[in-house]
Length: 126
Image (cartoon, rainbow, N blue to C red; front, side, top):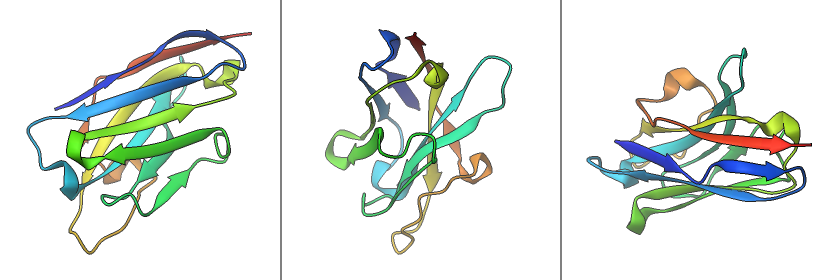
């Protein structure tokens, strides 16, 4: 299971840090991703990180503002979000992609992921 937390209501320009803790799986064997879905829109990629944390990918819309990281000892992946904008408002989901240890990928496609968390709502007011 993946449990996401840390969402909330903030003003534009503020920061939030999301967490996603995994249970019941060998966290080190999974690349992790964050996606988001705004009302009336499709789910979109935000950021991903390889199992060892050596590779990360970001959507252009968040590059330079968001940082993905992970702590394998705590089975947790984080998404630090700075300079938040109203267009960042969405439900944020974490996801896990099982990989082999020689695979350093950090996928962008939802179809690459095997497990999904329940989502945490981020609302950014203008």
